[in-house]
Length: 570
Image 1 (cartoon, one colour):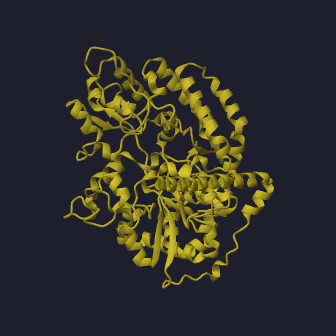
Image 2 (image 1 turned 90 degrees about the horizontal axis):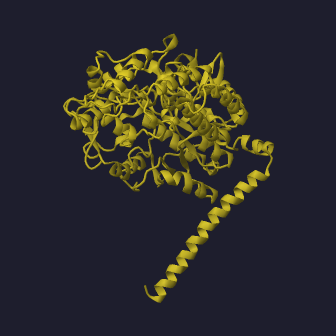
Image 3 (image 1 turned 45 degrees about the vertical axis):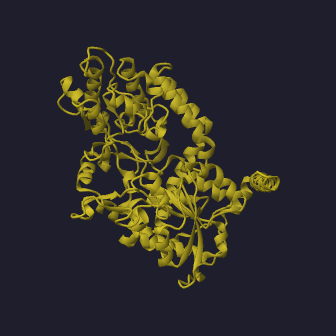
């Protein structure tokens, strides 16, 4: 590089550093300013409704609006694609996508906002993130009546299928967006068994009770199910450090408990992990571990494609794994399906979907995330351009009722991005991505799902193959789905302060009790500790939010007969 070029480079480098420093300083100044205020002053300022006369807002369809849109994390996304062109032409908008990857959401997004670079539309990926952005004054509160007026079909669809999502957009007495929802999030997923192992040890039926499960685990461990003459197998393992998978969720579910969620018991909300039945489930797991049925590496084993639990299941170390009976795993046309992968390693090997084991009192089931999804929020600066909010609401509403628009924004252009799996059958044959868009990187570049992160019940079911629908009905019955009473555990306001610490402590104590490092009575000490270290505060907030849920439902027009049953502890 010549001298002039080097000077130019240094100049731009100094400018870049100055901009970055300014963003960091802006963040620090903003945080210090907020911290200097009393809690009462912060609450007073933030609870005040934004001064927008929504009744007088007029969206002129002939006026072209420029909309900066921060969609779901989309590494590699490219501006100006086919989907964007369709939306721009139909709704007379100029879309300017703000594209971040997953890391950027947690690192770059806060700096952008603190520096005043807040997009018009913001997809918030979690209630705790929305609460933070609302607290810092970045988001525009939207009255429910505005959403019902300008996105009536969307609101009705949400109310009928995932009304709990409204809690995700709620903070400090105000609504800050339009929740999305995921149809598949309400389906429970049982475990899988090595069918050839069951047969080898003389078990003809898939275990259906805790007692039958225990006997199968005993034989898997001691009766040489793989026939190699060596005692080198275990009944099962788990992931003691992944609360989101709710490790051993089927065992806890047999006692009516989801240990990392809010549950309703005797009309009040309580943390599942401190209920007496959680102790009963731990006692059983502790007994099975002492008998040698549980792989000692359950503390470090992990879920996920290619992770240790996958490898152990495929390589014949364990004969059962919870939370694994997905249709894709058993789809014979899927090369990455578990059965196909197993039979490449062992032609006689075969997996079979399991059943949630029945426990005391006839209870059974497993944790599910629930149908509530992300939240589509709006930058507070749109108080001066509320017509942009109305235009976006019209767009989102159209995606719910217009099947062609739904397909375009979710899957792209037929014949280019996707086609029917069986074209002569049509929708019931299912959809499949076309090359090169069957590659995740190419799909992200095409901006699939970027502008439509939600779901639609009617279309969701219509475009599933009959084989998948049959599998779901047989193995993923919604009555076995145990959902959080508030949708997500971290929806309570103090979750950012206490949840991470207490959740980590719970996982550690649970593992120590199961392994025998601590006595079973250590559970009682943990319960007291949990309440004293913030659990009591969160429990009060959880009950407040549970009562607020009914108020919100009335305001948005939820039909009480369509409400999903909460995870009610007997």
